[in-house]
Image 1 (cartoon, rainbow, N blue to C red):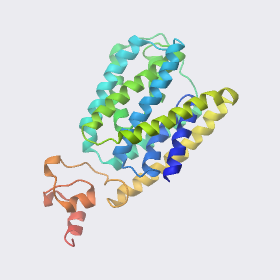
Image 2: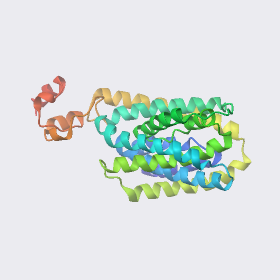
Image 3: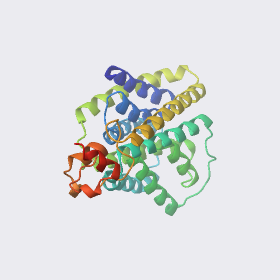
Image 4: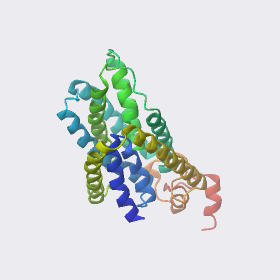
Length: 297
Protein backbone atom coordinates (compact mmCIF):
# COMPACT_ATOMS: atom_id res chain seq x y z
CA UNK A 1 0.00 0.00 0.00
CA UNK A 2 2.93 2.36 0.57
CA UNK A 3 3.88 2.20 -3.12
CA UNK A 4 0.24 2.89 -4.00
CA UNK A 5 0.38 5.90 -1.68
CA UNK A 6 3.42 7.38 -3.42
CA UNK A 7 1.79 6.82 -6.80
CA UNK A 8 -1.31 8.55 -5.45
CA UNK A 9 0.84 11.56 -4.46
CA UNK A 10 1.79 11.99 -8.12
CA UNK A 11 -1.84 11.44 -9.20
CA UNK A 12 -2.94 14.19 -6.80
CA UNK A 13 -0.49 16.53 -8.49
CA UNK A 14 -1.63 15.41 -11.94
CA UNK A 15 -5.24 16.18 -11.10
CA UNK A 16 -4.28 19.60 -9.76
CA UNK A 17 -2.30 20.39 -12.89
CA UNK A 18 -4.94 19.10 -15.32
CA UNK A 19 -8.17 20.42 -13.78
CA UNK A 20 -6.82 23.31 -11.70
CA UNK A 21 -8.08 22.31 -8.26
CA UNK A 22 -9.78 19.73 -6.07
CA UNK A 23 -7.09 17.06 -6.33
CA UNK A 24 -5.48 17.91 -3.02
CA UNK A 25 -8.65 16.80 -1.22
CA UNK A 26 -7.47 13.22 -1.85
CA UNK A 27 -4.44 13.76 0.40
CA UNK A 28 -6.18 12.87 3.68
CA UNK A 29 -7.62 9.50 2.54
CA UNK A 30 -4.29 8.58 0.93
CA UNK A 31 -2.40 9.30 4.16
CA UNK A 32 -4.97 7.40 6.27
CA UNK A 33 -5.64 4.33 4.13
CA UNK A 34 -2.42 3.94 2.12
CA UNK A 35 0.17 5.01 4.70
CA UNK A 36 -1.74 4.15 7.89
CA UNK A 37 -1.56 7.54 9.61
CA UNK A 38 -4.13 8.47 12.22
CA UNK A 39 -6.79 10.96 11.04
CA UNK A 40 -5.47 13.90 13.04
CA UNK A 41 -1.92 13.35 11.79
CA UNK A 42 -3.20 12.98 8.23
CA UNK A 43 -5.18 16.23 8.45
CA UNK A 44 -2.16 18.17 9.75
CA UNK A 45 0.10 16.70 7.07
CA UNK A 46 -2.52 17.32 4.39
CA UNK A 47 -2.52 21.02 5.28
CA UNK A 48 1.21 21.16 4.57
CA UNK A 49 0.81 19.42 1.20
CA UNK A 50 -2.20 21.58 0.28
CA UNK A 51 -0.19 24.66 1.22
CA UNK A 52 2.69 23.73 -1.09
CA UNK A 53 0.31 23.08 -3.98
CA UNK A 54 -1.51 26.35 -3.31
CA UNK A 55 1.75 28.33 -3.31
CA UNK A 56 2.68 26.81 -6.68
CA UNK A 57 -0.73 27.69 -8.10
CA UNK A 58 -0.80 31.22 -6.67
CA UNK A 59 2.63 31.99 -8.16
CA UNK A 60 1.31 31.04 -11.59
CA UNK A 61 -1.74 33.27 -11.12
CA UNK A 62 0.43 36.13 -9.83
CA UNK A 63 2.39 36.01 -13.08
CA UNK A 64 -0.91 36.23 -14.95
CA UNK A 65 -2.04 39.20 -12.86
CA UNK A 66 -4.85 37.30 -11.15
CA UNK A 67 -3.90 38.06 -7.54
CA UNK A 68 -5.69 40.79 -5.54
CA UNK A 69 -3.34 41.37 -2.63
CA UNK A 70 -5.56 43.74 -0.64
CA UNK A 71 -8.51 41.35 -0.63
CA UNK A 72 -6.24 38.34 -0.11
CA UNK A 73 -4.53 39.79 2.95
CA UNK A 74 -7.81 41.04 4.45
CA UNK A 75 -9.75 37.80 4.00
CA UNK A 76 -6.67 35.65 4.55
CA UNK A 77 -5.79 37.35 7.83
CA UNK A 78 -9.16 36.49 9.38
CA UNK A 79 -9.07 33.07 7.76
CA UNK A 80 -5.64 32.33 9.25
CA UNK A 81 -7.01 33.26 12.67
CA UNK A 82 -9.84 30.75 12.27
CA UNK A 83 -7.50 28.01 11.02
CA UNK A 84 -5.08 28.49 13.91
CA UNK A 85 -7.77 28.60 16.61
CA UNK A 86 -9.57 25.50 15.33
CA UNK A 87 -6.42 23.42 14.88
CA UNK A 88 -4.85 24.42 18.21
CA UNK A 89 -7.84 24.75 20.55
CA UNK A 90 -10.80 22.90 18.98
CA UNK A 91 -9.23 19.85 17.33
CA UNK A 92 -7.73 18.45 20.59
CA UNK A 93 -11.27 18.09 21.96
CA UNK A 94 -12.61 16.26 18.91
CA UNK A 95 -11.86 12.66 18.06
CA UNK A 96 -9.97 11.85 14.90
CA UNK A 97 -12.91 9.77 13.72
CA UNK A 98 -15.29 12.70 14.03
CA UNK A 99 -12.92 14.94 12.06
CA UNK A 100 -12.69 12.26 9.36
CA UNK A 101 -16.50 12.18 9.12
CA UNK A 102 -16.51 15.97 8.69
CA UNK A 103 -13.85 15.58 6.02
CA UNK A 104 -15.85 12.98 4.07
CA UNK A 105 -18.94 15.21 4.09
CA UNK A 106 -16.79 18.11 2.85
CA UNK A 107 -15.42 15.87 0.12
CA UNK A 108 -18.93 15.03 -1.10
CA UNK A 109 -19.93 18.71 -1.17
CA UNK A 110 -16.77 19.59 -3.08
CA UNK A 111 -17.47 16.81 -5.61
CA UNK A 112 -21.03 18.08 -6.18
CA UNK A 113 -19.79 21.64 -6.72
CA UNK A 114 -17.17 20.37 -9.15
CA UNK A 115 -19.67 18.25 -11.08
CA UNK A 116 -22.13 21.13 -11.48
CA UNK A 117 -19.29 23.44 -12.58
CA UNK A 118 -21.42 26.57 -12.50
CA UNK A 119 -19.30 29.64 -11.79
CA UNK A 120 -21.05 32.32 -9.72
CA UNK A 121 -22.19 35.45 -11.49
CA UNK A 122 -19.69 38.23 -11.06
CA UNK A 123 -21.10 40.94 -8.84
CA UNK A 124 -19.75 44.36 -7.94
CA UNK A 125 -20.14 44.03 -4.18
CA UNK A 126 -17.94 44.75 -1.21
CA UNK A 127 -18.91 43.62 2.28
CA UNK A 128 -15.92 43.77 4.69
CA UNK A 129 -17.88 42.57 7.74
CA UNK A 130 -19.28 39.54 5.92
CA UNK A 131 -15.85 38.81 4.44
CA UNK A 132 -14.23 38.90 7.89
CA UNK A 133 -16.86 36.57 9.40
CA UNK A 134 -16.71 34.13 6.51
CA UNK A 135 -12.91 34.29 6.60
CA UNK A 136 -12.90 33.07 10.20
CA UNK A 137 -15.45 30.33 9.47
CA UNK A 138 -13.68 29.07 6.33
CA UNK A 139 -10.34 29.09 8.14
CA UNK A 140 -11.78 27.22 11.12
CA UNK A 141 -13.20 24.55 8.83
CA UNK A 142 -9.91 24.28 6.95
CA UNK A 143 -8.09 23.68 10.23
CA UNK A 144 -10.48 20.90 11.22
CA UNK A 145 -10.70 18.91 7.97
CA UNK A 146 -7.38 19.66 6.24
CA UNK A 147 -8.71 20.87 2.87
CA UNK A 148 -8.27 24.18 1.11
CA UNK A 149 -11.94 24.95 0.66
CA UNK A 150 -11.59 26.57 -2.75
CA UNK A 151 -15.15 25.52 -3.64
CA UNK A 152 -16.35 27.92 -0.91
CA UNK A 153 -13.66 30.58 -1.26
CA UNK A 154 -14.13 31.31 -4.96
CA UNK A 155 -17.90 32.05 -4.80
CA UNK A 156 -17.33 34.09 -1.62
CA UNK A 157 -14.70 36.27 -3.28
CA UNK A 158 -16.87 36.75 -6.37
CA UNK A 159 -20.11 37.55 -4.55
CA UNK A 160 -18.88 39.44 -1.47
CA UNK A 161 -15.59 40.96 -2.63
CA UNK A 162 -16.71 41.67 -6.19
CA UNK A 163 -13.69 39.98 -7.78
CA UNK A 164 -13.81 38.72 -11.37
CA UNK A 165 -13.65 34.92 -11.68
CA UNK A 166 -9.97 34.64 -12.64
CA UNK A 167 -8.91 36.95 -9.82
CA UNK A 168 -11.08 35.02 -7.35
CA UNK A 169 -9.40 31.74 -8.30
CA UNK A 170 -5.88 33.19 -8.02
CA UNK A 171 -6.60 35.02 -4.76
CA UNK A 172 -8.27 31.94 -3.25
CA UNK A 173 -5.07 29.94 -3.82
CA UNK A 174 -3.06 32.53 -1.89
CA UNK A 175 -5.63 32.42 0.94
CA UNK A 176 -5.48 28.60 0.99
CA UNK A 177 -1.69 28.80 1.35
CA UNK A 178 -2.09 31.24 4.27
CA UNK A 179 -4.69 29.02 5.94
CA UNK A 180 -2.46 25.97 5.55
CA UNK A 181 0.44 27.69 7.28
CA UNK A 182 -1.79 28.75 10.19
CA UNK A 183 -3.30 25.27 10.48
CA UNK A 184 0.09 23.54 10.46
CA UNK A 185 1.38 25.92 13.14
CA UNK A 186 -1.70 25.14 15.22
CA UNK A 187 -1.30 21.37 14.91
CA UNK A 188 2.46 21.50 15.51
CA UNK A 189 1.72 22.49 19.09
CA UNK A 190 -0.13 19.22 19.74
CA UNK A 191 1.20 16.75 17.15
CA UNK A 192 4.64 15.60 15.97
CA UNK A 193 4.50 16.14 12.21
CA UNK A 194 6.93 13.88 10.24
CA UNK A 195 8.40 16.65 8.11
CA UNK A 196 10.79 14.43 6.18
CA UNK A 197 7.89 12.37 4.87
CA UNK A 198 5.72 15.45 4.21
CA UNK A 199 8.48 17.08 2.14
CA UNK A 200 8.89 13.91 0.03
CA UNK A 201 5.13 13.57 -0.48
CA UNK A 202 4.78 17.24 -1.42
CA UNK A 203 7.71 16.94 -3.86
CA UNK A 204 5.96 14.07 -5.68
CA UNK A 205 2.79 16.15 -5.79
CA UNK A 206 4.70 19.05 -7.36
CA UNK A 207 6.12 16.71 -10.01
CA UNK A 208 2.56 15.65 -10.80
CA UNK A 209 1.42 19.29 -10.99
CA UNK A 210 4.07 20.18 -13.58
CA UNK A 211 3.31 17.09 -15.69
CA UNK A 212 -0.44 17.60 -15.34
CA UNK A 213 -0.19 21.24 -16.39
CA UNK A 214 1.52 20.16 -19.62
CA UNK A 215 -0.98 17.36 -20.27
CA UNK A 216 -3.94 19.58 -19.44
CA UNK A 217 -3.49 21.48 -22.69
CA UNK A 218 -4.30 18.35 -24.72
CA UNK A 219 -7.42 16.99 -23.01
CA UNK A 220 -11.01 18.13 -22.44
CA UNK A 221 -11.04 20.14 -19.22
CA UNK A 222 -14.81 19.83 -18.70
CA UNK A 223 -14.85 16.05 -19.20
CA UNK A 224 -11.92 15.59 -16.82
CA UNK A 225 -13.60 17.69 -14.16
CA UNK A 226 -16.86 15.73 -14.30
CA UNK A 227 -15.07 12.39 -14.31
CA UNK A 228 -12.88 13.40 -11.37
CA UNK A 229 -15.91 14.68 -9.42
CA UNK A 230 -17.60 11.26 -9.79
CA UNK A 231 -14.41 9.64 -8.48
CA UNK A 232 -14.43 12.03 -5.51
CA UNK A 233 -18.03 11.04 -4.73
CA UNK A 234 -17.03 7.36 -4.65
CA UNK A 235 -14.04 8.07 -2.40
CA UNK A 236 -16.12 10.36 -0.17
CA UNK A 237 -18.78 7.67 0.35
CA UNK A 238 -16.05 5.12 1.13
CA UNK A 239 -14.39 7.41 3.69
CA UNK A 240 -17.74 8.26 5.28
CA UNK A 241 -18.71 4.59 5.56
CA UNK A 242 -15.34 3.55 6.98
CA UNK A 243 -15.10 6.41 9.47
CA UNK A 244 -18.68 6.00 10.75
CA UNK A 245 -18.27 2.23 11.05
CA UNK A 246 -14.94 2.45 12.85
CA UNK A 247 -16.03 5.16 15.26
CA UNK A 248 -19.17 3.20 16.11
CA UNK A 249 -17.03 0.13 16.86
CA UNK A 250 -14.71 2.14 19.06
CA UNK A 251 -10.95 2.03 19.49
CA UNK A 252 -8.99 -0.93 18.18
CA UNK A 253 -10.30 -0.43 14.63
CA UNK A 254 -8.81 2.66 13.07
CA UNK A 255 -10.35 5.84 14.23
CA UNK A 256 -11.24 7.15 17.66
CA UNK A 257 -14.54 6.84 19.41
CA UNK A 258 -17.16 9.32 18.18
CA UNK A 259 -17.12 11.55 21.23
CA UNK A 260 -15.28 14.47 22.76
CA UNK A 261 -11.91 13.92 24.39
CA UNK A 262 -11.28 14.47 28.08
CA UNK A 263 -8.83 17.17 29.24
CA UNK A 264 -5.14 16.30 29.18
CA UNK A 265 -4.77 16.58 32.98
CA UNK A 266 -6.82 13.38 33.34
CA UNK A 267 -4.32 11.36 31.32
CA UNK A 268 -3.00 8.07 32.73
CA UNK A 269 -5.54 5.25 32.82
CA UNK A 270 -4.52 2.60 30.25
CA UNK A 271 -8.05 1.20 30.06
CA UNK A 272 -9.49 4.47 28.82
CA UNK A 273 -6.66 4.90 26.35
CA UNK A 274 -7.19 1.45 24.94
CA UNK A 275 -10.92 1.75 24.38
CA UNK A 276 -11.43 5.45 23.63
CA UNK A 277 -8.07 6.79 22.46
CA UNK A 278 -8.01 9.24 25.40
CA UNK A 279 -6.07 8.43 28.56
CA UNK A 280 -7.49 9.33 31.97
CA UNK A 281 -6.82 8.45 35.58
CA UNK A 282 -10.48 8.97 36.44
CA UNK A 283 -12.19 5.57 36.26
CA UNK A 284 -15.63 7.17 36.67
CA UNK A 285 -15.01 9.28 33.58
CA UNK A 286 -15.07 6.15 31.45
CA UNK A 287 -18.27 5.42 29.52
CA UNK A 288 -20.22 2.56 31.11
CA UNK A 289 -19.44 0.15 28.23
CA UNK A 290 -15.71 0.76 28.65
CA UNK A 291 -15.85 0.41 32.44
CA UNK A 292 -17.40 -3.03 31.99
CA UNK A 293 -14.65 -4.04 29.56
CA UNK A 294 -11.93 -2.65 31.85
CA UNK A 295 -12.94 -4.98 34.67
CA UNK A 296 -11.65 -7.96 32.70
CA UNK A 297 -8.17 -6.49 32.14
